[in-house]
Every structure is written in structure tokens, then in C-alpha cells.
Image (cartoon, rainbow, N blue to C red; front, side, top):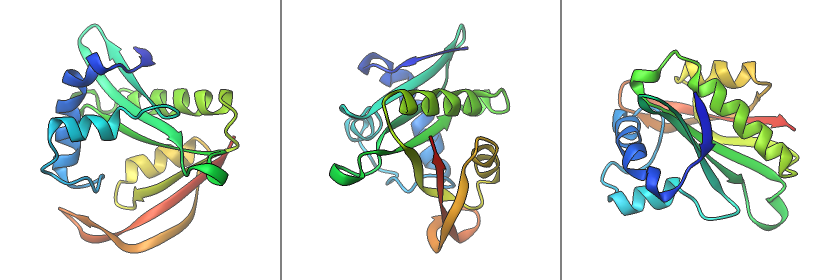
Length: 161
């Protein structure tokens, strides 16, 4: 597996993963009806944000995006989002992307990472982030409308760098 910076040329491979993950209705609050251009603009952020892809000989395994959590006086805390292709699930792609994002944010001088909206029923993600040193600093009750579980909480997770 190779993890590298994503480019605009990666969008055709990222978009089906984006559509599948968002369309499942379990982890992201993005609207289902985003145009390709709007979805691309959300995921392939302009600097200081950036995106990564995890690829192998068979194609795209997953993707992540990261950058400052807030502008100005909050820009020393990073944030990130992750998507793994369903066919790559269980192969360590999320962990590899998580480790790569944490390393790059630390190298760029961020002091901490804050995830603003980890769906509490996404137990695999919550477990992964805990194993990488994140703690749940709070949960916003019923802040996410899960397609399967109804209204569930969103964890705010934090990790110093």
C-alpha cells in the first residue's frame, strides 16, 4: 500500500468511494445530492488543507483529508476525515491513513487533532481512533440522523500531537 498526496486526477477514483460511504447514511452528514464538483471541492481542499489517497496495484483503497480545524486563532489544531473503500475494509487502510495524517499534521506544526463529528455507532472508527490515542471529550446527543439507528450522538474526539 502506498499513501500519497491526492491530486485532482485522483477524483474519478475517489468519487465512487465518497458516494458509497456518504450514501450509506451512517458516517457523514453530507447531502446525498451533491454534484461531482461540489463533492470534489469538499474533499480535495485547498491549502492549507490537503488530501491523501491509499492505493495499491488494484486501485484506490481509501482517502483522507486534513487541515486546520478552525481558521485564525484555532488553526494550531488540525482535523481530518477518512473514507475506506468497502472492498478494502479490514485491511488496515484506515489505520495506515490515520497514522499518515497524524504524522503529517505533527510535521506541519499542529499541536493537536480534533475530530468534530465521529458517529457514536461507528464503533470501528471509534475503536481505531482510541487505539491511536484519541479520547472522547464530549458527545452531542442525537446530532446525527443515522439511516439504520435513527438519531444518535456525535463524539468530539481529541488527541495532542
